[in-house]
Image 1 (cartoon, rainbow over the protein chains, first blue to last red):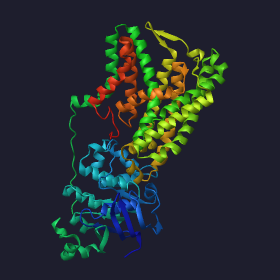
Image 2: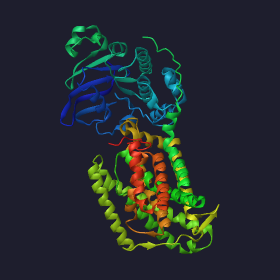
Image 3: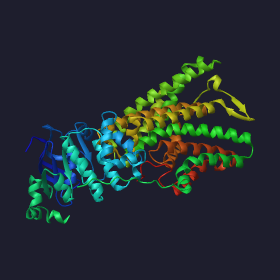
Length: 240
Length: 343
């Protein structure tokens, strides 16, 4: 396993009176796609939001490139090189697709070459470039959310269920874009329920249950072992 | 896994009814102006009242624009906003009195220079005061509306009392600069010079604000922050800094509004900002919380309606704006051009 870009050590997060994360330990190897798996409600989204700083970790360590960042505000974590695609996509509905993309490039103007690459990966965004983002379909919004996170080169991407509710063709577009990102040496921590996407993209997998990590290993090992899948997640991933 | 097929969507024709529904808030002003023309009958009176209404509306807009952005961006209800109007008026008038020779001269250049200095001083002081107000009073109560109301009303009272301490308890009567006194006549209608100036200042300010919000990165961040602040931060922007900047700018604009309103009324009091807050809140609510365009339309509607009704049926003038707010909220419960949903 290569040098981890992100390490969580014994992270606890409470939301109101609920203990959501109860000692999460995980590593995201540099330049790899790490799948964060588990049943609904086990703390996957909270893990991403805790890494991003939208929820505050009560205790534990969050090391990004070896630096503790638990006390950093959300914006500082983003500027340190973390891109975030939340489950609800976080699209600015009243702004155009172009304006959403411009905001994605937080440290300067949108690089023309990067824009060209992104519009090549997500052609629908070019079609609706000047339209209000609120008028896009669910799939197009999801594409915009991912493209916006990629509008600036970042080292690590936290992506929460990008294929939820999408048609297979759009899922394929999305997967291709993530594959390209990985080919550029970027690291991805991806929450994903779609088994074929998880198997196609994932290098390693982290399985959570009841707010903590219960298994870590190679994605291929998990994908091939139905008994392990049923033990860890209550059912075979093929059933998804 | 294959790539998604390229698709070439066709765009549906938007029906006239849909276009009208979207444009209706913008059409309300010309509709009201035309209705006013037929209701008043005499073109000269109508023209005078329209200019007066537009001037009043522009000044209300200047005061309301900062408030609506602050509400939209950080969900802060600032009842202390009126204090900046009062402080701006007192600082501005103090400068005008100090430059009495300039305001008394029959030179437009000297007159406008004095007004310019008064505006700069008022905006600087209220901007700085806004910064202190945000740090000391507003910052500790983010996310708590009831506390915001209580503590900002408290701040308003303290600042009003400080005005009494510094400038005394009495109202101050002021004269407009010489060249801004009187009226010009056009098509038989008398239009006060100062009201025309107010219309011009308000229109320029609206255009500048719109350009900043629509054409600049900081404007983009503000608009996005009004809609989804946490996501703006997750993209790497320090929204807190942006908010402080907007709060300072909003306070400075309230100060500008105070100077202009003071010269309009030709008398200033410590409570003048507090009294204006009723109209300012009506404008922010009917315009749609967080919307500068909505506040602009709302302010002009309020100004025009109040002037027309005061001429046609003076007893109804006071209730006309409440009636307008009720009608608009029945039509569009979130206001005309809402950016954030009212909770």
